[in-house]
Image (cartoon, rainbow, N blue to C red; front, side, top):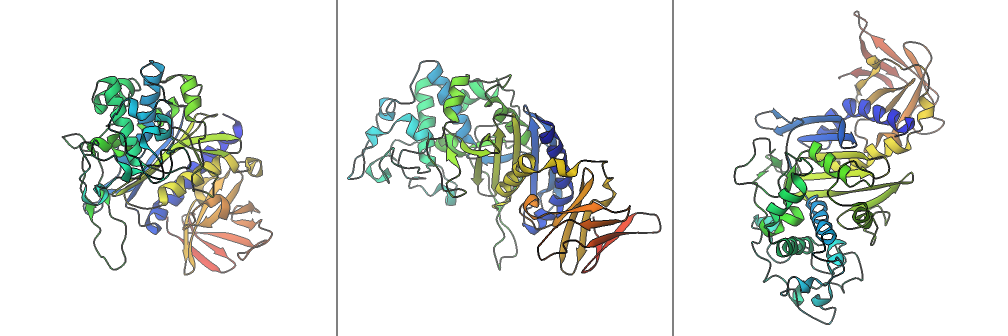
Length: 450
């Protein structure tokens, strides 16, 4: 890990401590868990907000979340293991193992679908079948009657078409080839070998104490937010069943890095998984999809991982393959915050020009949220300078102003243009006990609220 990245990780940790407690309120998110790890070992692991709003039970570092489509990463690793053992080939036809995968129409023939196409969302198959399980929580126990000509949307191999049903089929293949139940295979071949002590392939019969409540999004005109029931996902566990915490996810993601000290698949399998098989529509075609992993390049670093959406939960976890650097963001409501935070954390780590902040480090005394009638502003010390940005920001790096120190109480905004206060001074005001209580800006006084 370079000195630049080490410095920027320290900087983003300082930013998160100040920014997130208010940001989750602006985003109407009950709670968020954030982990930044290196080689699977947490550097920063903190929870903000609540796992139970009504009783004000706070989230903690061990809190468990429904991580939904993260399950696809585990399932893909399981398939690659079986290929390494010679029990299947990912370019085999699915019908070779599941003879009930058939059905043909004018668009395509399900008998042509390969395991690789299921893994890379190139099967052309419908997204979720016909059971409406996302609304009624009744996930299918068996898939045999779900595949027919009605499951065909596009010709296989012709385009990216995200499909949970495809990953449910991969779970069925794992069961068929290994002669084990999917849960048992995951525990024996992935979860236990990687020492993921807080990870479950599906909701266990006895609900873990640390599993947080999943809250409904804020709906205009509705006063009380529904708490969604937890449910088993059965045949869909391989697509969306997993439950875990951020420390375990960091370990798992680290094991996918090519030079990881511990892993349950070999280097060649990992290279195949991180090879893009097509582009998704996220970020205007800049996000590719491999085998159970979405793929992005940031500053010449390959970033892979997955997001997850489950009733009451949105999560996003990724690892930098070159640096073995993991960022995990878990939330307990349906909100875009998890993806926004994951993106912005990686952006700050890889794209902050750390040389701008060289010099004697400033004290944390200035750090905090400052409020006026116009809004809330976060101020954070990074190296020799301060940065200021709106507490509502989706990405501080894209919004911040850098403040140069003139003296102990006065700084100057280094912006050269914009609608804020380029080139103007701000002054910190102290109470009788010499604690900063406000800041005077060109538009008036902002009182420190945190």
